[in-house]
Amino acid sequence: MKKYLYPALFVVFGGLALAIFVFKKPENRLPDLKMRHGDLAAGGEWLNTKNAVQGLQAKLRQNPDDQKSRLLLAQAYMQEGRVTGDHPYYDAAAVELLDVVLRADPQNFEAMCCKASLSLTQHHFAQGLALAEKAREINPNSGYVYGLLTDANVEMGHYDEAVKMADKMNAVRPDLAAYARVSYLREIYGDLPGALEAMSMATKAGYVGLEQTEWTRVALGHLYEVSGDLLRAEACYAQALAARPGYAYAEAGLGRVAAARHEYPVAIAHFQRARALVRDYAFTDELVDLYRQNKQPAEADKMARESIKMLADAADQANSNEALGHYADRELAYAYLKTNELDKALEHAKIEYARRPDNIDVNETLAWVCYRRGEFARAAKFMAVARRTGSQNPVLLSRAGLILVKNGQVAEGRALLEESLKTAGYLDAELAAEGQKLVAIR
Image (cartoon, rainbow, N blue to C red; front, side, top):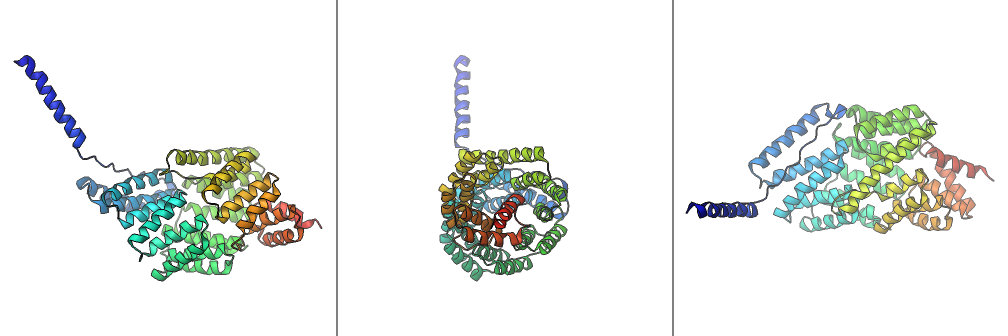
């Protein structure tokens, strides 16, 4: 009897184990919070973040169906991605959490808005627009959703619609985020004084020291840079750094001011500090130009290759996972221009153009790639689209001027070059030198 009993019991218990495995409710993993280091770990904000995350994780371990806590944890990780620049980790963690919330409640407005925001962060702009539109159907009275719709329409090149969404956002809830979007749209339409006014209102509407407020103050500094007012730009960056020590984007702003004054070693030091604080390819990209201007070609080449690797890794992730991963083709186009790999620059500029052919920045990128390839007539076609909103950005004006001159429209081209050179400190040295050379030829 025992001869048959043990195998029979094995089959029974095995079947029970299999049933438990198959029908057991799957556990939802809780992504960990990474440690901060250096200046980012100083102050009470990091302590508050750790305590909040630990509290939310404890609630979810006790009650895995607590979707409110899961949503709050996702939002905390989204903010941590902004603060640390570690978007690959925290964006993926937030999406993982949000997907669980949306499976439990497909009409969860906040979760849908968060996922739309993450799509925009990852440069999945069409997806972000679709999610924001769906969220608006659920709650058409939220200022936040109109902010998302403003951003998504800007990135897709739907500028008239973006203005409508920004107006609705300000009608529902005028605050820091609403004023900042008005400023951005005014800049796009060439109203620099109006952009400065709105961004100044945005900074005053925020709490000093919060990341969102100091991000806005840095944006105000950028507008002063574009207008050629380096003293006010420097003051904004210094104030942001004093209010939020170790703020990488304020360090980078001070680096740009130093570069405009041709203080290249000082500028390099600022960008090295920014790069050590936050993982952002833009800091590495800026160092390419600074090392070249400081007569350090080997360091410049090293930074250029590192910048391309960072962007290519992000692009590969996006290509392998459509749901998550940072589209970086526009940035790659510029990175390849710096290494004179013009075919690769064109390849990536065209990929980005296929995604959003109405965006003025994308058209400017393709125009500039064509210019560098000597395809001047083609460059003029894309530049005409890039200038359709009347933007007065000096880099855009300078590039447009060079393209016009190469296409035989010398007087118009020189006028744009002269206008752009009024804020020459904002232009990179090579672009300013090329413009000055053409203006000097009579």
